[in-house]
Length: 107
Image: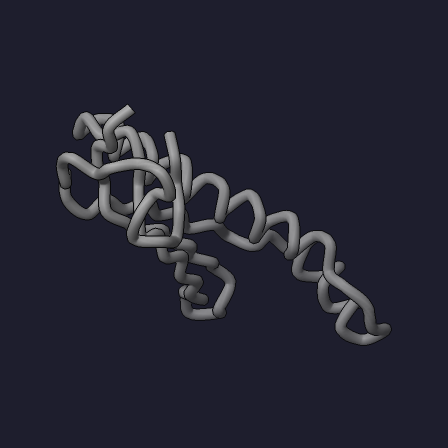
């Protein structure tokens, strides 16, 4: 499956549009990660625990979006956009959403 942020696929002809597809992941940040990130914030540097959580959530959202595109008979997703939101009463939830247009391109 080709997944791209562009609205075309270089060298391919899009022959059918299957509609907009989404993938969403809402991930909770646990106490240990929050504590480790607090130390990083105090002492400086990068927060590997938050970066890992963000990467896993992004990959899961993209995979879910691609699965939904395949379920519609698409072989690519174009115009992909990824959004991030902080949710929850204590801002302790991370939402990552991926969206794009499912298409069929000529092989």
